[in-house]
Image (cartoon, rainbow, N blue to C red; front, side, top):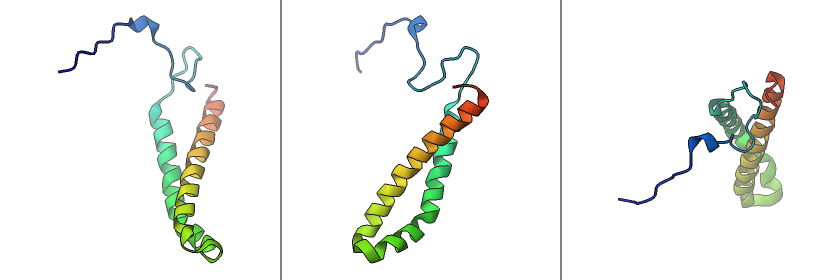
Length: 92
C-alpha cells in the first residue's frame, strides 16, 4: 500500500501559519475550535430572525443568503476573537 515516505528531519519543523512564534508561549487548537463552534452555534440561533428580516425584501433567496452570510460572519468573528484573546494573553 502506498510508497510515499517523508524524509525531512523533524528539526526543520516550523510553526503553522498564523500561530505564535514567541518562545515559551504555547497555543492550542482547542481554543480556536471552541470559539469557532460557539460562533457557529450563535449564528444558528439567530438564523430564524435573520431569514425573517430578509424574506420581505428578497423572497425565497432569504434562506441561502442568510446561511452563507451567517457562516462567513461566524468565521470572521471567531478569527477576530482568537486574535483578541491571544493579544490579552501576550502571545501575539
